[in-house]
Structure formats: C-alpha cells, structure tokens
Length: 220
Image 1 (cartoon, one colour):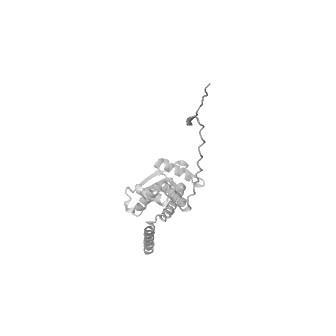
Image 2 (spheres, rainbow, N blue to C red; image 1 turned 90 degrees about the vertical axis):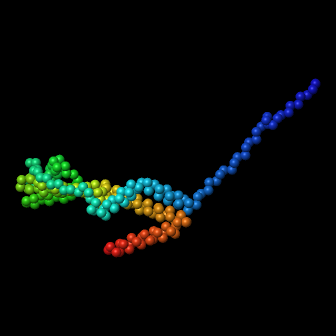
Image 3 (cartoon, one colour; image 1 turned 60 degrees about the vertical axis):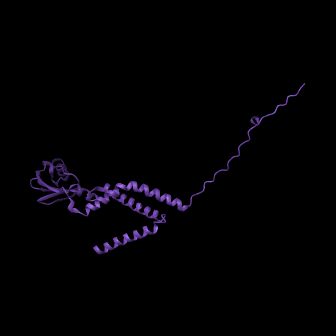
C-alpha cells in the first residue's frame, strides 16, 4: 500500500500578522510660528469685518475736509397753526406740538432743544444732515417752521462725526474704532515676521509718524 505525502503550498500557510507601525508623534509647533498664524488669522478676518467701515470713514474723511462739496443744500420755510390741544393750563404741550409737526410738515429727527417764554416757544429737531426749527406764537398757536437739508454729503459727514445720529450709531463708531486699532496692531505684528521687509517697513512707518507729528505741530 503506497503512502500519500501531502505538501502544503505557501498559499495555504497561515498569514503572519503585520508589524504595527509605531504611533506618529505630533510635534508641537514652535511658539513663534503659532503666534504668526494667530496674527495672520486675526488680521485677515478683522480686515474682512471692518472693510466697509474703513471705506466709509476714509471716504467721508475726504468729504468732511471739503464742506464746499455740499451739493443739494437747501432751506424751506412754512407756516401753520397748531391744533386746539397744543396748550394746557401748565403751558405748551410739547408732545402735541411735536406730533403735529411730524404729521403736518414731515418733520423728523430727535428733539434737540425746546424753549418757552411769555411770547414765544421754540422746538428744534436734529438728524444727520438735517435740522428743523419751529417758532411758536404762544398767543394764538401760529408757528413758523424752518427746515434745512444738507444733501447726501451732509448726511455722510454728520454720520462720520456721529452728530445727531443717536446712541446706536455712537456705539457703532466705538466698535469700529476698536476694530481699526486691532487691525493696525495685528498688521504691525505681522511685519516683524517679514525678514526682508521688516526694516524698510519700520522705517516707512517711522517716517509717516514723523510727518503727522510735524504737521500737527505746524497747525497748532
């Protein structure tokens, strides 16, 4: 009886377990590179947020320096009589007067000043690029209203100065100023990472600051 010899091939042999790769150790970036990345990120996104703000205040800074560009400036004068409820035993009812002027004459803005004596009362409204002054005869309730418009450029100039624009706009100016300061500081910080331009950039900045200080001393 012949014996049968079975020879196993390499394919039938059990597969050896692959050697596990050593865990990759993530090196911590140097502090210098981390600060550079943070400054660049802050500078880019601060620039995007404040882009329109910079454009607005740059453009209105030019128009503010040239008040003769106030195209469309005009003054209107009208007269009228207040309703019967304009006066009470205590004096002029300013709420009734203000609402009548808004409804009958299209007056807008916030009340900036009011005055009353034995012969005359006055009420002033203010808004960016706009003013309205009403003078009231306390004997019969007749009034004269003078309205001044400074046109689109006047509106932009008053917004630049924050004049008669309300608390919300004043808050926006404060926030915008903080953004611009932050933008300048991050840009200055990035300059120190540009080896080829660092010295030249600092020299230009110093020269610009010197010109500004010199002009300030000349005009004052």
